[in-house]
Length: 222
Ligand SMILES: C[S@@+](CC[C@H](N)C(=O)[O-])C[C@H]1O[C@@H](n2cnc3c(N)ncnc32)[C@H](O)[C@@H]1O
Image (cartoon, rainbow, N blue to C red):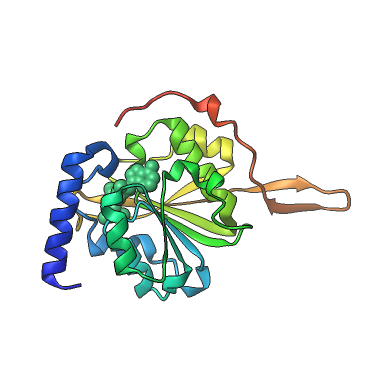
């Protein structure tokens, strides 16, 4: 990444924020420091990987640096202003222009095979119903042991506790960085292990309750 690319990314990002402040929700792309924190647990063995809201591709580059193959990346971006640049920058990645709230309907993968989801989505600007739809959709693709990585500028995990509980998920604070504008924290969200009674023995297994997202309707504001 050259200095002039980085400068043009900033300009493009800032313009997008001016036009769509709620969707872009940041005045500048994330820093390399935040990108490293978001991707530090991910490597080639996690492929395929889904990235939600890649913007100009800061986390995408970090995933490639971690050894994830470009052809193992599915980039889900709503903003048409970012989609074209992503397609030319990452030609062998799959770039899907869509609202991440419709992940299930998109049938991106036939089965639970995804090792990690990396999200740059502005969850704090979204309604609980939308956040629940995104989380529920992502976990239909994540294999057992797979995790969803999310950053936030806020003081706690941006996925509200009732949504985590209803989906059988837990959030762990991975770390934070002040080398970002503004400073940010990263959470790793994964399935809780549930005790399940089977006919012959007691065993732990991953479960994912079905969630009625309509029960979570209502806006939280930004
Ligand atoms: C805060 S920016 C993060 C961009 C990039 N990941 C970064 O960290 O620099 C949010 C990104 O999510 C995208 N986005 C917002 N809502 C979305 C949605 N519902 N579905 C897909 N992408 C969305 C925006 O267009 C933007 O690219």
